[in-house]
Amino acid sequence: MTEKARQHEKFLLNTTNRTPLRRWATPADFEAIGAFLCDPSIPFHTGDAMVVDGGYTVY
Image 1: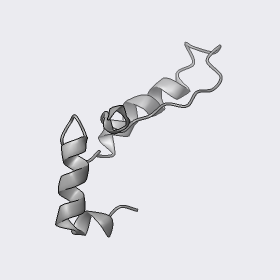
Image 2: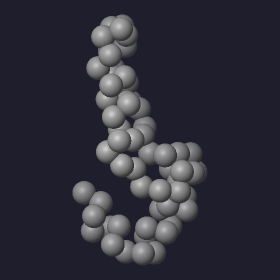
Image 3: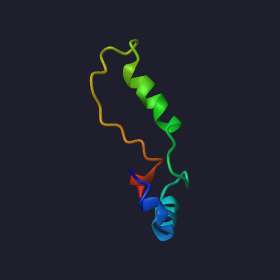
């Protein structure tokens, strides 16, 4: 979904400079949160809004 936007160098630089991790996410960055939400050892956790953005919303 971000392929077209990431082709614009100015947008790419502005976005990554605002992100504390200084990079775009990869699919692997989302695997751990998916595993956490599916973990049967935490059955009382029934919902949440988790931001996985490398710290982008901190700024």
